[in-house]
Length: 220
Image (cartoon, rainbow, N blue to C red):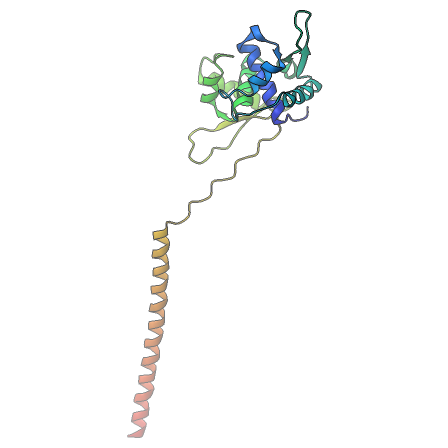
């Protein structure tokens, strides 16, 4: 399957979330789905999709067999749903993890466990980590990756691979020298040069004195 673009990821994640957390209002109308995508809570980043953006995302998701349109006899408006678990063969815990990763970006195992509670209650952090591990080694292709530890962070984060490989953060630059340290180093270097030059001058003066003394001896 081709990688999902950011709009597809947000639309799919919103459909999955609302299917589990508000089943009475699922499938969703276009307006409800657009509002779900643009929520300011439980979303990272926060977006401002227009309905036409959501329609484009839905069209491509339907081509990928990840979404469908439903229009029942008792509803004038078309409604939309997802086929995420069926298409990928996912369990409820796996769906919950991938959903929060789609909606909130890379997170630690502890954050994932705390944010999946409405969709699946992991009994322990170890259970959440085990499910993440299964998604990482999944065949024929992994759906989650464990990111390298970032400087300043105690725990590693996880990200989904539904959009393809995750760009790795640039390594933290090494801290530059303190201004005071630089000034001291430059001063030390200047003093060392002066001492070397002074030593050379003393040597030259000593040689000149020796030559002058030899000359006087010759004239006496």
